[in-house]
Length: 549
Image (cartoon, rainbow, N blue to C red; front, side, top):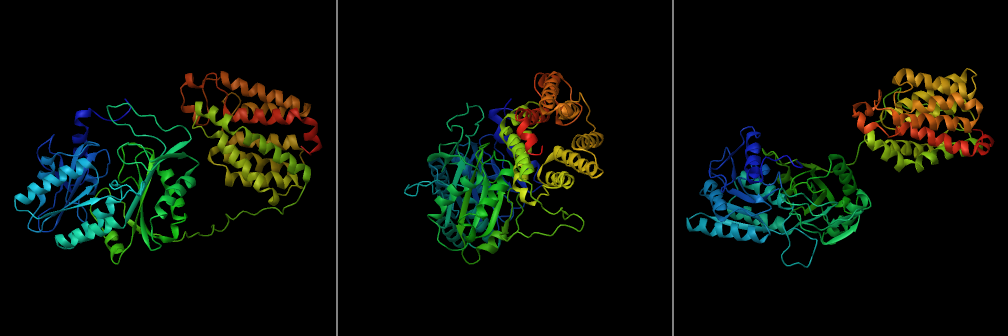
């Protein structure tokens, strides 16, 4: 099972029922399953202009997630990526339309235009006042005569919904919706295609590439571009938007297309607000999943030029499950660290040989990043290499601040640097290791004994011993063999690291949660890192000794 559904035939009705059941009584639906699937405000009394929208399912929380006080009155749900029928749309219109009339908000897709348009005509024949607006905010192809409707549709839902809630008439709501559509622009980017239930997933985006200018139904983007990180992705999206944006205040909507993590979306939000159009953005909606394409690993950005009163309408509170709110963009406030936590560092001092030695150690760990991550993926979360490499890069960047000429203070300074730059338990344990080694060195102990005491303290606090499948399995024998020289220490470290591949049960770290079958034959990544470090140092033992190692 690749998706949490019960059956393809019932997944839309199951989802609607779940949305209604979890709404706290805010939503209800019309009878008529499975052909009539209309979600309605439970408190609706037909006293104001009704707002009706809809389209294919698979875009959740759109459209049912925006039904409620202050936004939509009803949402008509079709099959996945398929327009609802004319009868379903008509049922929705007739169920919610009173003397004030109804505004249909339709995205610019042929099926939606035809089915909503015909339903509107039939509703008018019953004597109802019905107007319809077509959202075409996609700027992927600026010269396209029929641009698609994307997440900019949500601007229309919110502004027209706020006006209708305040009692505006149908003409005013329609004019506002048309104005918002004219001022809205959207474009999306994705690293992967979506998985349509019951269909084979299309694998059209090569590794290292992304699609720019794609729609919300799994259709291909306008072009494939190199995927070079979040900032580069946002720059490519912003470039398309900026070409059509006047230099006036705007609101931005950052939409998760369904498969991007919350962490990724927060990074993209930072990149959007610091981008070339960042200075024009006064408000931001999201980042959040608002108009998705099932599980598509991508995002879209919609912008709208602000007119008088738009900010207030966008900020009006609503009672809908899918709206994340509209927030003003402001500068980041940074508070000082509490007293006692500001690092007290020993005075920096220079020592060329020590700096060269430390830099070399860091370079070894950086070079091993990918290999260690691959090893860690067998027994952990695949980040040991990145964790060590990040700390190594930070240590290289801190060289000018380190007391390189005073090894006692240097141990402590390295521990402090690791505690601030190296994540997870490994960062804490290595910080303890170096801090304890610094304390031992201050009492006059030579380097090996000081490092041994540091290791003892780390084992005491961390609880790891020989045979527990950790870096201790390589570090302890290496330090014990160090009096015989670095080559001997390297051999001992390698023997200890290789031994971890025979251990099928870990007693410390994330590997304790892994089945024995997954551990057997794989060297512990922490032990491998220690072994590689000593092997590289041991192969250049004479240079290491000359550099003060």
